[in-house]
Length: 437
Image (cartoon, rainbow, N blue to C red; front, side, top):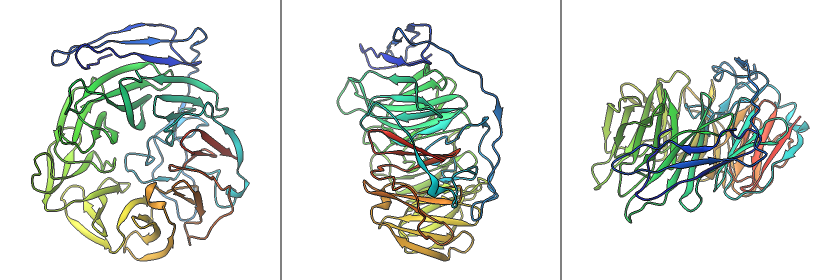
């Protein structure tokens, strides 16, 4: 494992639970820019490792009205759910085409399966893969059994040093998590990126990032982190295999979206330079196209990776991911989030309105006011549209016409829902509540 930190500082990581590593001891350190740190992996006395191999199979896309014909998710373990990052996959579509259990006819039958314990502050919506559910909070990451909710492991970095974590990403048997670090010198930005073994929570490697992280994306074995900063580049990219810095840009990636290995960044950068929006190759950092005096906000990409759906002021636009050609789609929306299905786009506006649009023409099919819905992204799974209204409730709708569906209230949800393999995951910011059929 490689790591780098601030001068004279040491970081410890605690891994506990039934999947904690049998071995303990010092984590090898590496030097970076004359600085060095060491980490220690510890376990409790009862922290045994019993990892059962899981056979990989490809999930089958559900053939459901209004949500069909999208490519299946990456191969997941047999009989398990899959939700790799906040927007489902790197397209950030918010659309799970593989859900076949919780559907319009069955969503009224959901009942409480279990509630996670203990309560922890700052909890976010989980990611799900290979039979485990991964939930972050203000102080660490917890992995629990998908079926029972039993804790498998917990990872906690040094609480005196690391705080304000970013989102979780699951990729190829790894959990990638960035946590902002307290810098040794005032007027600096500092983050540590942890790469954990998804089955055990063991630190595979961690590496230092000189910047703020509010967005994280992993695609093509590259970790892209981004956050607006006065002191450092807004977006940086690292090789996942060894933490090597690949490139950095002075523009911000406003949502974690990849269109076939291309990302969209925008802003003025340090020194209040000219406003630009740039399409950047995720592996090399080379600029594919730049547009001056435009501030494009990436919302999602299509399933082929040929186009971005972007917000520009009040409008929703389509941006060609290769040529940078912009095509108008709809006006007066002020888009915050979008769910991309084969035939429709479901747009959440900054004013708290959810609208269903024809994906080809931009024509409005239906629109509904849902106050406070602009703070969390909506999702579609199993032909059901879930819209989270901040600190209030979840609206469960039929995406065909926006009609309400009978379902549990999911009261108190403070983040988006995750729906996969017959389970609905809801967090109130302190605990995870799981519903099933």
